[in-house]
Length: 135
Image (cartoon, rainbow, N blue to C red):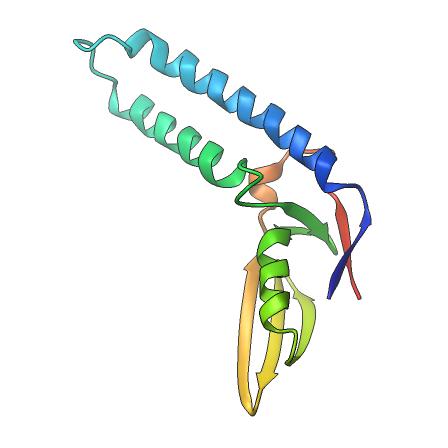
C-alpha cells in the first residue's frame, strides 16, 4: 500500500495546470504562423506540435494521471490506487527495481506482476510532486 508522506495532490494539480498553460502557449506560438489554410506546416514542426499536444493530453491532465515520487522515481498514483482496489483481497508486495515499481500478487495460486515505469522524464522541473512511501 502507498501513502502520501509529504506534499499534496492539490498543489500538484495547480502546478500541472501551469505546465498545461505553458504547453498550450508553445503550441499556439508554433502553429500561429501556419494557421492560414493555404500555408502548409513543415513536417518537423508538425511533429513537434503532435508531441506537445500528446504531452498536454496525456502527461499534464490531472484527471488522467497523478504523478508522485516514490523512492526516487515518479509513477502514476491514480493507476496504483486503482490497482490497489483490485488487489485488496489478494496477497501482494510492492518493491522498487531499478527504474520501475513492481507489484507482485498472488490470487488463489495464480501469480501476477505489474510494472510501473519511471515517468521522471516527463516531469522535469516540477517542484510540487508529492512524495509517497510504501507502507
